[in-house]
Each structure stands twice: as C-alpha cells, then as structure tokens.
Length: 260
Ligand SMILES: Nc1ncnc2c1ncn2[C@@H]1O[C@H](COP(=O)(O)OP(=O)(O)O)[C@@H](O)[C@H]1O
Ligand SMILES: CC(=O)N[C@@H](CCC(=O)OP(=O)(O)O)C(=O)O
Image 1 (cartoon, rainbow, N blue to C red):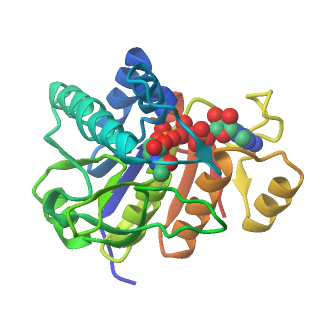
Image 2: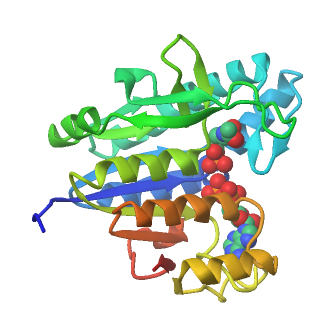
C-alpha cells in the first residue's frame, strides 16, 4: 500500500453552526489539528429560521429539505453566504488560510437534480455525481483549507441543495484514493447513543449490522439515519476511519463512535 499523507475531513452540523460560541470553540479545535484538512458545514437550522423570517415555510421529508424556487434562494444566501463566509473569517482569524466554496466554485461538486420519486418532488435538491478531488487536493497541497457549503450545481447554471452529511461523505470518498482520510462528523451529542436521553451511553464501536438493528428498533432515528448511511458508505469506499463525536471532543478522536 502506498504511504499516503493523512487528511482530516470534518463535518459540523447546523445546531453548532447557529450558536456563535459553540462554533467558535469547534473551529478553534479544528484549527489546532496539524496537517491537511477540509471542513464541511451544515446550517439547516439557520436556513429554516431565515426562511421563516422571509415568509417561506420549511418542509422536510426523510431529513431532506423540499427546496422550491424561494427556498433555493434562501439556502444559497444562508449556506453560501452567511454561514460559509463567517466560518472562513473565523478560521482566518485563527491563523488558517481558508477558502469558502460551494459545489459550483471550480466545478468542485457536480450533481443531478433529484427526480420525483414516489410522488415526492424535492425541487432544487441535488444528488452528487462527481467530486473534483484533483481541484480539492491542489488547494490542500497549497496549504489552503477548503470550507465547503452544502450546495452543489448541475452544470446547467442551477445551484442545488445537498445534505451536508452527504457532501462530507462524498468529499472523503473522492479523496480516499489520494490520502489516508479520517472523516469526522461532529455535533452536539457525544456520539451515537444507545439511549438518546443519556449522553453517557456512547456506542464506542459500531458495525453496519448493529446500525441496521438499532435503526429497526428505533434507537437510531431522525437525522442520525442518513448521517450513518453516508458514513458507512464512506468507510466502504476506502476512507480509513469514520468517527461520530461531540464538538467538545474534536481534539481527542479516540472518543465518540468509531465505525467498523
Ligand atoms: N441513537 C442516537 N444517538 C445520537 N443522536 C441520535 C440518535 N438517534 C437520533 N439522533 C438524533 O440525530 C441528531 C443528529 O442528526 P442531525 O440533526 O442530522 O445532525 P447535524 O446537527 O449534525 O446535522 C441528533 O441531534 C439526535 O437528535
Ligand atoms: C437537501 C437538504 O436537506 N439539504 C440540507 C443542507 C444543510 C444541512 O445538511 O445542514 P445540517 O447539517 O445542519 O443538517 C438542508 O437544506 O437542510
């Protein structure tokens, strides 16, 4: 096996992003990691509140936002503007050289508009088709930290909304042929929990079969289902290590849930 350089891909979720102090603390831990790294951010909670203030209602189906004509403008402004540029400014302040990108920038992430399935029309939502690992690694090798917003494009001039957990998994998968990749999903809980009400009940090591059982029994539900489905897909595609952990433990990746 080739001796590849290590690369850290971190995804931070919407509940952290909307809270200025937890975002600041998370970014400080991210910045303290030596070496090559990429940050992917969400922002779903903020998009919902900005949309509400603009009189646009939010509908989620299986963790995905129905993205109509008005909503795609809202998420483009919130993810590609407010959240992405705030994060870049904070990372620059912490001494990193960061660049904020959506999928259309440098044609980093091309997707196709999701077709209507079982009568559900998600609107301007994209399923990832191709990630330009070469462009990303060129930035990384130049010492730049790409900060990716959960927006892709279809190559025909349309921006598409794509789940941030999926962006992180696809980014990690695409870079796995070039780097020894660790993918970290960090959020407000300590990891995947056996008892969602008990933050001490972290499952330290999770196998695909156990995930399927816990999903069937309802212990793993809501946003954790697409997160773990994406995470297992990344592991099966050559990503060396996948960790689901708390923002508070981003400086100690031995904690949290490790996928097997
Ligand atoms: N077994 C579980 N362990 C931890 N979290 C769980 C579990 N089952 C469901 N969840 C829920 O999944 C959520 C994380 O998914 P999501 O909201 O998509 O995260 P993010 O903030 O990273 O975008 C948690 O906030 C929690 O409410
Ligand atoms: C298609 C789709 O659902 N896109 C997501 C993108 C943001 C996201 O995933 O943010 P979090 O990580 O904070 O949940 C959405 O608009 O909510």
